[in-house]
Image (cartoon, rainbow, N blue to C red; front, side):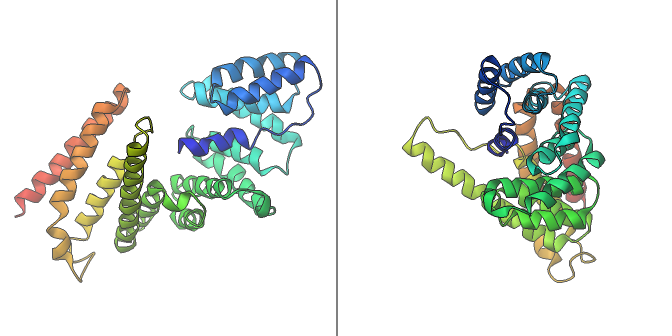
Amino acid sequence: MKNWLFLLCGMALFWYGCGLGDAQKTMKLATEAAAKQDWKTVRELSEKRIHSVPTDKDAAVLLALALFHTESDKPASIDRAINCMRQVLTNENQRYDLYFIYGWILLNTGHFQEARIPLQTAYELHLKDPHNIGQDAQGLVKYALGRCCMMNGLYKDALKYYEQATKSTDFNDWSTLYNDIAFCHICQRDYGNAMNALKTALEKNNLSKQKAEKELLKNPDAPLYENPYEYILFLNTAVVTDYLSFPQYNPTNAAAFSAIRQAWYNSAESMVAAAAKASPNASQQQELNNLQRKINLRKAALAGTK
């Protein structure tokens, strides 16, 4: 997802006409720093500009993004970022990118219900000018709205936007998107379609790994493939396989899934353990360790049914 996050900055870097001289230089340096993801510098420069001109909308957008990227764990900073975007949107009501940034910040800081309106607005505005908006940006708007719906328990709506996102590059090759689609089907107890989506997610995940390995052979400095949500993909597959092993959920071939569910739980357990070991966050490590214990309990229960 990191590459697409550049759009959060890139879509916002349009000039309102900030003036000349030092002010223009400050904003130029701030936008260049944002392109490099140097959010500390972005914050310093945008703060400087806002101190001089509190009404500068470009500076407010950049400051909101900088606060989101550097201090998302600090409620006061996130409140300030949100207020910056609200002030900008007071006088800018036809720019989908600004609504998107506002909604994205809300969505990714746990304000799921509040995020729905700006993301819906961004979606509706971007449809008015699709020819001038890149596939990646279109996909990101649709994915964000889908995820917002999912987090609000609106699984049918989420599936609608997720399916639209799969029509955009590079989202059509993104395993996490199909994993989210599977999750929505799981929540609707539609385990057959959930498994179909998970098969696609696993396929896309493997293709991404193979592509990264080929790039690594050509260039030893190429980045390694990394999917921080891979353990969720394997766990979801194990859970859906488990459900499909019961005749009441799968009258046609429950036995076939019963034969492989233990193996999927074994894979999921390994993935969760690796994620816990790699995580630098103590709280997340604890959550993953608890998840691993739950998987072990389910494995023990399955072993007892043999």
